[in-house]
Amino acid sequence: MSVILHLSDLHLGKDQPWERATDDKSGIVPQDENSRLAVMRTALSAVKQHIVTNELDLDAVVVGGDITTAHDEEGFKRFGALLDELKLADPDQIIAVPGNHDVARDSDPNTEAKYAQFLEHTRAAGIRTPFCDGVDTLEAADAKPVMELDDCVIVAVNSANWCGVGVRSSSGTEHRYDAARVSESQLEYLTDQLRDHETEGKVRIAALHHHLLPVTEDEETKPFESFTNLARLRAWISHHRFPPCCTAISTVR
Ligand SMILES: [Fe+2]
Image (cartoon, rainbow, N blue to C red; front, side, top):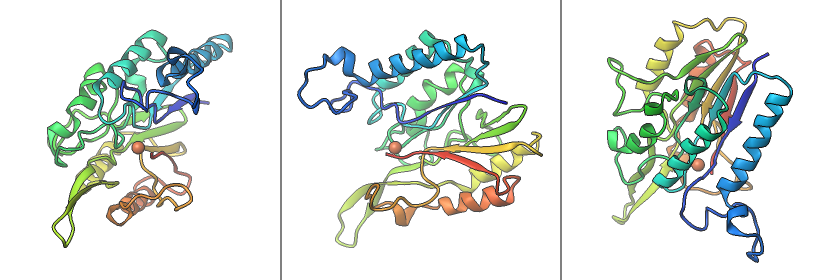
């Protein structure tokens, strides 16, 4: 059975207040023990130790987005350094999808600028990444969104292309929203990619940052629900070799 490590919302970076990891409100715990980086290093070191002690083979690492906070480059650098330090898996065994915090919020959808920093610290390092609109096209794509293991197939999905999109209200005021959407180009590309992989009898896993279903007001209130089209992804999952046994890994914050 494949062993997959799923990480998400690491939110690494140097920007306060995100850098502090816990709810330590009094500041008693020293910063270097209480940062997200320190907590991730401790947790992943324990995971690594468990893997070694139990002689397990880690087949894949899936990073479900929000590696950093507010597109902070320092967070991407810390993520890379953490992977180098822990040596959990080869880059080719790692899938990373962008979260809303990983893309350039002020850049338009379908542009290289939207993904430049994310890809510099993931794809350029050999990590598998999804189809990024504006960088990848159906004719030319460096994306490697499909990882095939003995008993499962993992597909990386980009749902962050419209994060930070500007929407003008009737009063003329523009607000930026995190609209969770997938493009038809990406779905077409994934459909094409899956033709080259054996999926029959395997667990199919779609990895994306956002929830496929709208979050409830008990969880989070954000005015992007009316812009989402992830139901389109649900339809794709249902009809393109992702029958009901599909498992979706998604998170949002
Ligand atoms: Fe997020």
